[in-house]
Length: 223
Image (cartoon, rainbow, N blue to C red; front, side, top):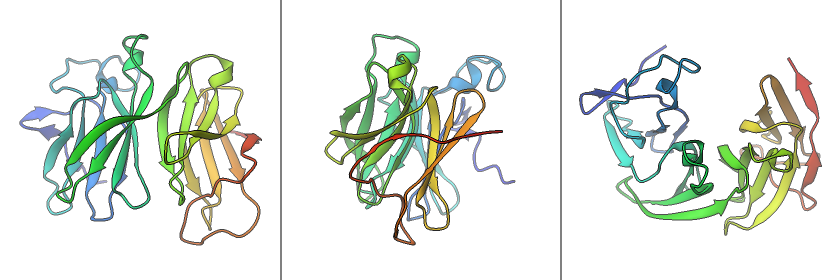
């Protein structure tokens, strides 16, 4: 295992949470600070840095803070052409009155971020992990707002809700997988993994496409 970074600007990062790798090899990650708020995810400590989105350069791993406007930056993913970076803001875990949006940034040619805006709203639940499919639809883990919010919610590139997967418990993580990327794996609740798959042909080099009738109830795998 190689440690890529533990410090920024001479101070220790608080609790890196989610990570994606851009096509130029840069590593983008969020640090909402949850890891030091209690002994649940790590060791309780005093924050040394504000919650932030960071980019580690591919050449040498130099870290740069690229977004500090979000209360608790959490899950993140790119639009397929990587011109947009989506970031979940879970500031509502501190203050229930905060918004429950997934935010969007424009990715500049310099790999800096701009054009911050709200992309979609998960209220009364909230998001966690997010992923985009090959058509630019955003798939979001969902929950923590009552049983009706538990599962996965899918949004078109314009932010309109277009699909859902209902689960009996809140979802926290999801990813696409399988030999032809036509399966979605969802971590939910304290110890459940759900797996759904789409029949038919799929692009061997692409992620899951949303079917026309996108309302599923999942199959469950317990471990």
